[in-house]
Length: 193
Image (cartoon, rainbow, N blue to C red; front, side, top):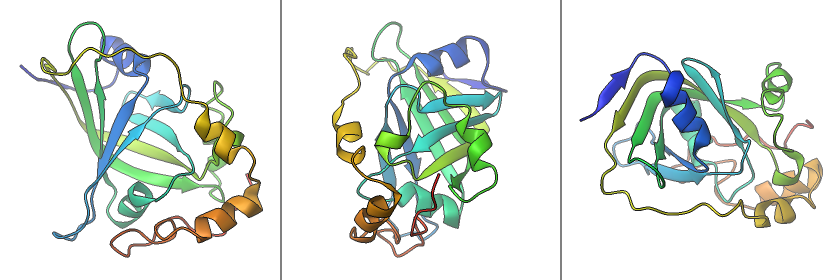
């Protein structure tokens, strides 16, 4: 039932770009480490850079597990589900890295996200993922659900922060600079964008 793809193009690319939500999964190398699974949304915060490379904006949140796992080992899986239309699940298994604000590539990468203003969301990094395996599967058991709109709460909450206060907020959280398993997470203080 599943198909393996050589690249992200054609109808596969269209499907991915049309989904309002996707999920990321990562884990530390330690066998007893914490596996992380996160939903991602906000229209315009995900882009396909080329046929094997995707990127998304990593915004303020209550932890930085994906960043920590990518810094340690680079392994990541992204998944999209069709909640409307024909059933489909697409997974991109690959290697990722967080590109932080002080990285020379940050500014150029940010130009690929023209449809979202990252400032009110506490942008921490841009996650770049290079696909190693691209597969789809049926999704027959995934329910129909409708997308109404993005929530405004994230932008309202973090839009009142500047770089200094955002760094202070992150420093006050237990699992931003260090992951649940003690791995290095987000470097603090944040560098200005």
